[in-house]
Length: 87
Image (cartoon, rainbow, N blue to C red; front, side, top):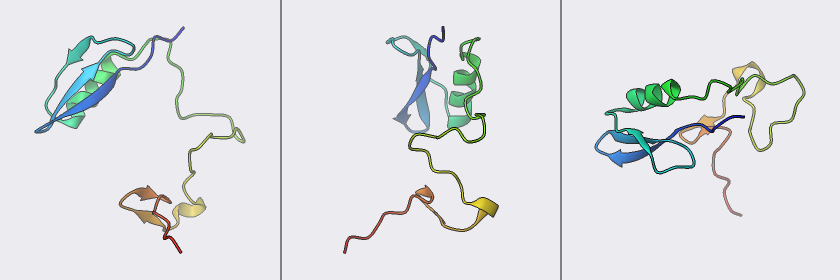
């Protein structure tokens, strides 16, 4: 059974707090996002399976797929996530 994935909280000034899931335990407060991600990866549960690899045709509840052929449409908010204008 998977214990859960550690997560980060930005603390400001480029520092992050990496915490154990379902707990108040702090794994560390690295400087910079790369170091924070490295700490999260180092504490991933051993029984964690593929996260992004899924069988073809399985729906992705709420996740937008990038356009076929890598088309345009990306914004600062990410591909396909532009705010809609109100009429």
